[in-house]
Length: 116
View 1 (spheres, rainbow, N blue to C red):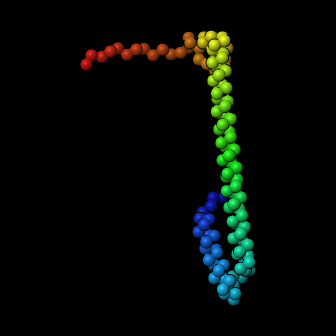
View 2 (cartoon, helix red, strand yellow; view 1 turned 90 degrees about the horizontal axis):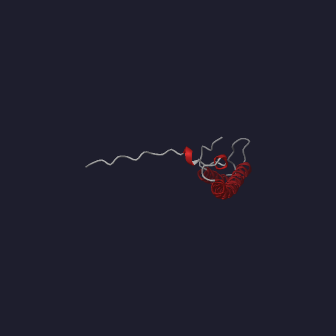
View 3 (cartoon, rainbow, N blue to C red; view 1 turned 180 degrees about the vertical axis):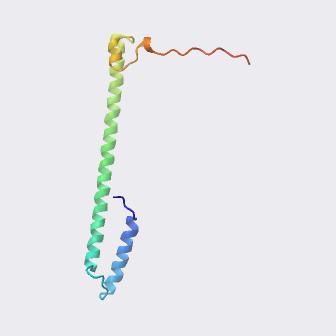
């Protein structure tokens, strides 16, 4: 479920209500007590801290994945170049590894020069 309220605004409002409530001990909200409000405020803070911690872990993991993919891409490029150098640019092995054979490359026709 998406968060529809601002965390900071909601916590600030809860703290303000708790301060006023502490000064007015005769105030009542039925089964809700000042201690329950304070406990729920602290629980929300702890959940927010946990979310921020998980976001940091996710960002670090995502960066590590990006680095690994970059390394793999470099290896793939080197391997493809190796197949091209070993078996030739028109070989089946080069094509099987992912290269485009020389005979299969499209040649673009040269445009005729226009007189201006």
